[in-house]
Image (tube, rainbow, N blue to C red):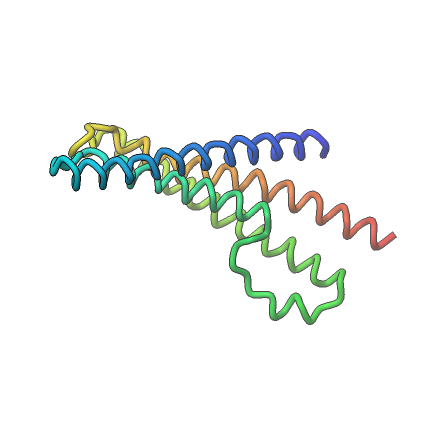
Length: 162
């Protein structure tokens, strides 16, 4: 399980660095767009499109980080009322359900990804598959974090049962 934690830690750090860089680039692009538009009265036509695609990547990578940190919205009405062991079992079941949802997203995103690699963005001429790839990467990261979480929770349940 140590290798799994190490892999998840590395993926988390790389994601955090990527989100930080993307946020900086987005902020710079927006500042540049606004400045050039109001000072020189010349719009930078490609900046809005690029900013949108970078934001999509930021959101998906940030969502995967939020999942690992346990910061995503959750309904805890049931698990809050259960004993510690019951709450841990419910948490594992929820992780398994989310895993299934993410695997379904990956499965159905595969043909979309192939199709979108043949489409190009209107201004930048960027293959739209690079944008759609953000969902695939985020799902894979979330699955990695869920496997780590499930393994950790099962180990805790076993440790507390003994």
